[in-house]
Length: 165
Image 1 (cartoon, one colour):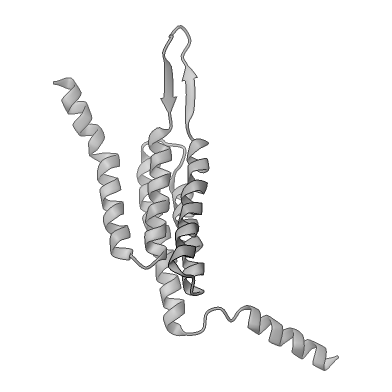
Image 2 (tube, helix red, strand yellow):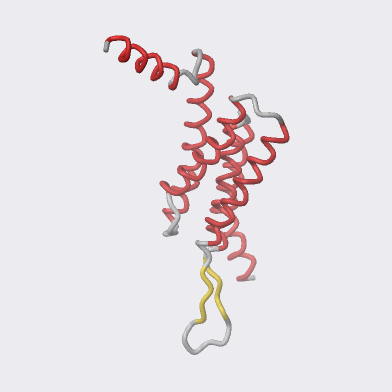
């Protein structure tokens, strides 16, 4: 019976041996935390604006996108395989974003109103930021987050100002 438990123990150790050294655990931790943090920043801004997709949603989208590219990259995937992974992430986020878009007609109006396009685009952008962080392009992810924040917070003011003129 002792040999059986020893075999179980060795199997468990082997199953959790995908992180082999301090460098790998540091890379994985930094990339995943960076993705979650940057997604959270965008989500916080959206939540402050009363949007349905807030902090948790944006954090999960960025973290998931980062994990989807991080695992194959750390496993030694070739560029063509990584390209297919990124394509899959983009398509998946497209479905998630499509679920945020509502099209309705207000009572007494003949024009249909579309809501949620900015939320869908924001989730798409958040996934791209997660992919950037996941492949180790943290500076690109940070810059993209800052630009997205400018678009979310500054552009509505500029549009309002121009429409009033």
